[in-house]
Amino acid sequence: MTETDKYRRDMGTFGVLFIVVNGLIGAGIFGLPEVLHVAVGEFAPWLLLLGGVVVSAIVVCFAELTKLTDRSGGPQRYVGDAWGDFAGFQVGWAFFIARLISQGANVLVLVAYAAALWPAVGEGLGRTLLIVAVLGSLTGINIVGIKRVVAALGAMTFLKLVPLLILMFAGLAAASAPGPLVLPQFSEVEGIALAALYAYVGFENATIPAGETRDPRRAMPRALLGGIAVVTLIYFGLQWAYSHSIIAGTGPDAPLTALAAEYGGDMGALLIAATIVVSVLANLTAGLTSASRMPPALADDGLLPAWFSKVSRWGTPANSIAFFGVGALIFALNSSFLVLAIISTLARLLAYIASIVSLPKLRRNAGLPAINFTILIAAPIALVLSVWATLQTSIDQWLTLAALALAGTALYFIARRNKTVLKN
Image (cartoon, rainbow, N blue to C red; front, side, top):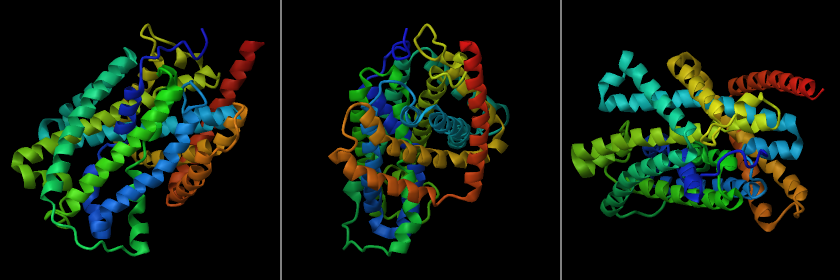
């Protein structure tokens, strides 16, 4: 059995779309409206719309990349196929570790929101049991088949988007008439643009489980482009409703919850609070589903032990999924480690840059022209945006990522040495 057919391809276009949408919409958008409004006023919806359009340049490049392989790995696969095993391993390793740590951090975000609804899970045994239950159930459902993951993600996507859409349309209907649009100073936009762009980070998760996707060369481009369009419009609508409401600028800690309370009273606020919990849970599900498929991609190339790519009777990489679930649990239960979660964004940005740079070479390898019109327009915008975003990070983030890369280098050469010994 070859590496491209040993996994069951049970995920279609909608499954990929669910991962895209839930990778993008987590907890961030629920706190962002007030921050953006305070910074740039009624220009805030347009800033989010502009952010979505600009980030679409990166998404377009990834859509082109997904047409060139049907194997799992996402950025690791693209970079490895273009520049060799070492480069691909470093991208895959950094991405995997960053996602593993941030998964632990995101579980604590879920616990914090859940505790607002049910205080018993906010501390002590209740907190521990909730963390174990969440990560255990997500790990289990991934092991028994990606088809079940898609069904769960579909249900959670419905449960979180419907309340948001209701709030958005209620807010749009009640919004005050907009006045003349006043463009903010460039310095004001520059100071808040990174926060707006980070709301669009996470789409790349959907490219990783290509080996478990039916016809990924068609399904993934459609889902990526459709997902970024849907999320951009939702972000724009929610921000417009908020910025043109009486709540805007009053400083609420939970702006969308306050907006829901304005239109629906306590019941509306409770509904949005529950929506936040579902949204974070869906984001965790999408994160575990994608990141747990990175080690099998590395193992298939002989860059990690074959144990990681062992296939269960359900056609899933069960060992890798369990490894990721246990690792995330360890980080979640030892929150002192979670300061490392900040490197997740930097690792993603570097994966963006490396993947986009790989695109012309991969196209030549496939017998295609290195550049087409789409890439000619999108790639320069995507690279400038990604490089600019990396320059906004701190030296501590770079040093932490460098330490992880050094550890990965050691593992790479150990794996290569073992591979050579086995061949001999």
